[in-house]
Length: 146
Image (cartoon, rainbow, N blue to C red; front, top):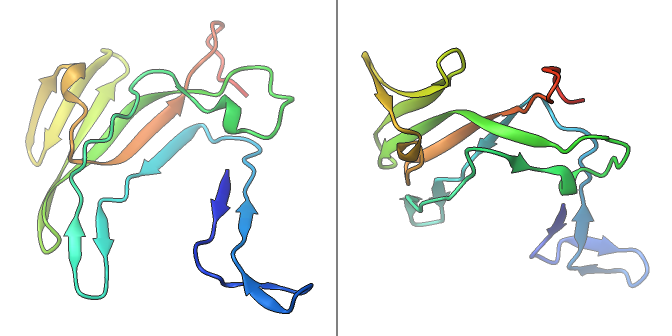
C-alpha cells in the first residue's frame, strides 16, 4: 500500500524545505479475522455529514494475496464475509443492526434489537453497511490457511 500525503508536511534534509512525500506500508501477514471499517462519517470545520454511499464489497472470495509483501505464503489470502454491522440514521442519532451468517446453517440472519429474521444473501449488502467482519477461508483439508 502506498500512502500519498497531500500536504507539504515532510521535511527534506537535502533541500532544507518541506515537500510532498509518499510512504509505503507493507502487509506481511493477515489476521484470521479481518475487520474493515467503512468511513461513513465526515467532518469539516462547519459541517458533519453521514455518507450513505453504496459500497459493493465482496461476500465471497475477498482476495488480498497481491497486497501481502511476504511472497513465501503458499496459498491465496482469501476471505469470506461472516458478519457486518449497519448504521441507520444521521450524525446526532442512529440505529445499529447486524447481519450474521450462522456457519452451522450456512444462512444469513438479520439482528435488529430483539427481532431476528432470516435474510437472503442478496439482501446483506446495503448503503448502511458500516463494519465488515471477514474470516480467512479454510483450505480443502479443513485447516486454516497460514
